[in-house]
Picture 1 (cartoon, one colour):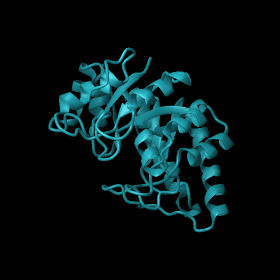
Picture 2 (spheres, one colour; picture 1 turned 120 degrees about the horizontal axis):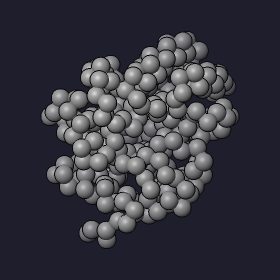
Picture 3 (tube, one colour; picture 1 turned 45 degrees about the horizontal axis):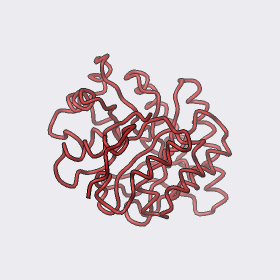
Picture 4 (tube, helix red, strand yellow; picture 1 turned 45 degrees about the vertical axis):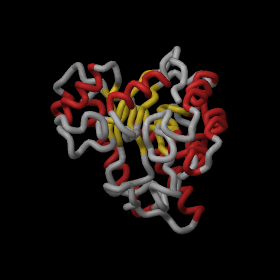
Length: 265
């Protein structure tokens, strides 16, 4: 059975951030968010009822360029301390800092060998930090075709290859169904190929990045494929409602419930 999570950057956005988390939790979901420095983490830390599934652990630097590694690791360490304070055990790991519109702000080594060796060595050091703090980091692939031009891990297989080489149970894959569909399609095969590495799943439909059931993806089949490979972790909706927010939330819940209702037209 999946645990369901809603992105607090998107849902109930008119509420102050701590109240967004409370509202998401009140409705039976975990909460997640992209970045922490702009939000009052002390308020979440002081609320023993706050339930956070995952949040962004990348602040600066780059894991894909030697000049950015130390800043990258410093940000990861800071995020790890925050994670422990708010009782969250899973953090999102990107290859480096992104801008407010998802644009690349971090360096990527020009030579492929430098790029991949640096990424491998950096992830090994992240694994050590994760072990020290008792955390898990889920490395996310992002499509480079539409949303994040130049991102160096555009396909699930790219991130999975690095994770397999590191070989740490503390480094997982954040499988984003939206990004996988935009970049390559064939998302069911991506689930099958990487099922043993998945630490978190993100969902949104294509096109538009709205809730499941609004686009071309057969999300009932996606949910079935996740069950078939034995995934029982968190599925988070990182999507903008096409219309009514409440309708989007319920469509998400129905799609990934244990006994989903019949698909709507």
